[in-house]
Length: 72
Length: 407
Image (cartoon, rainbow over all chains, first blue to last red; front, side, top):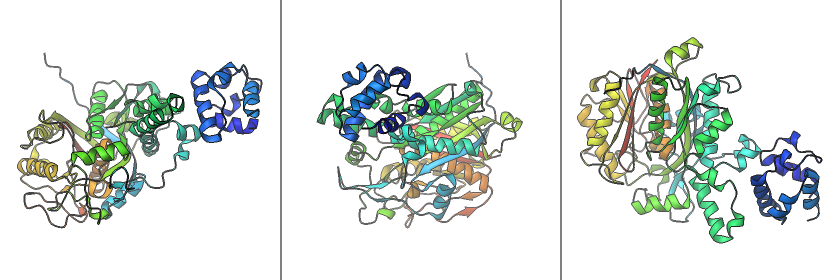
């Protein structure tokens, strides 16, 4: 999955587009612990991508999250 | 000690509706006045049933995030709230949100979300549940989401008196305005209960019509051949302000709400008390708070769900209290029974009735039940309506009556 696709999903979770930058810390980009649970669910249900909540929670930056979804 | 509260004049400055009869108050009002029912056959599961649905509803209108998380009930409420605020000429970006209250009635809140997330839990396990399953299905979710959306920081409640919820919400807001706890009250009702659990559950009670060969004719209030109601969904919202405040900001008032009466049958979880004593209490209280007497009433929007017993008890109470036979209508024949939204949508329709001097018809009334001694127009009737009542009752015997006058 590309960064743009990830960004679209994050916007659909209510995260302001301007906060979603590759160099932003995960929590600063709105991916707090609840959003991580939701993102893992949406990726699995809607895109068929299995990325665990633990993996997403261990990501430090948006770039790390993007790398996780790009690898699946 | 008796606490004496001076009831101020309260004006209705905005209306919003999203109902099976139309997207918006204008479309809903027009279809109600045309007397065109909206009931249709639903899918066969979990039981054969009829329903009045909000057609062509696209949650994406709310924005992408809001189309994913909130329950359908809250989505309908958000759309109706936006219309009501626009109708009132209010912009949340410019108001003092600390003085805005949000009071919404809902009988089942986010039950659709609760049911689907519960299916996910039982089917695939906890990891398939949304982290928003609980906040979207909590009883408070409708009013809480509205406060977040609109930046309304005053008191907010979701009130529940089952099918009287929408009317009870309006009555509750009258008290908040009287006590000075807010300056603007965004009030109403919302429900989206056409769900497997509710359809099957209400069918088990025996409350739903089984006229499957004639969906449009199924919900027939006060008709001799009525056999139950048709479940509907939707939202109705009103903006209320003290009349002096509304005037000071140059707002247009559609009508005023003069009184509210609430009571309980204290009788049965489903059935109304056969003597209608609880309902009469609420009717009398609404009139007393409006400073009016029974003979002043010129129109009544009845609860009239089309159940054999409910209509009989309501009709008997109205006939005894109002022997001068003011025109009575049940708009549910067109909209379906909107459950917790019904009281708010019907109050809004009553606002339009007194504003326009028009009693909407009761559809499907072909043969008036001989036990019903009421004047029930089957065509729109014009005339000045100095005082109208909107009547709501809920399972558990909870009653709510609003007294509404032209501005």
